[in-house]
Image (spheres, rainbow, N blue to C red):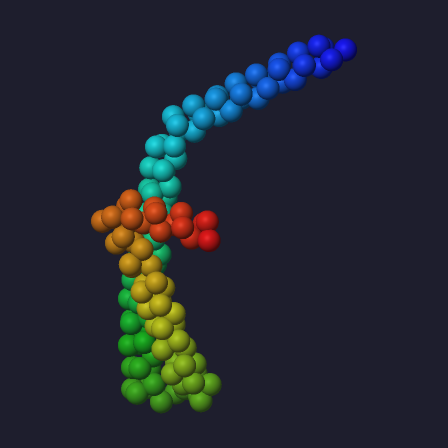
Length: 127
């Protein structure tokens, strides 16, 4: 009976070793492609955020000019509209500026030093 148990244990260990070896081979062949796709994704993600921040800043600029002209030239507005223009435009400008500032550095880092970005990204995942 012990011989059967030893045989089964040996077969199980061989199956496990083969599975680990196949997993290692799979990781070694797929890792470069996965890393390349991750870098490409992060590059596209940060570039999209930077573009949204820039477009938002341009929109806020033109809406702000329009509100300023509306407040200064046309006196057909109430206090609520004036308050919305005076608080909304700077708040939106700050939001888009922060969006731009928080994403421009990672965007540049992904474009200029993708390996450094990847190392920093992996340390954030581990910690």
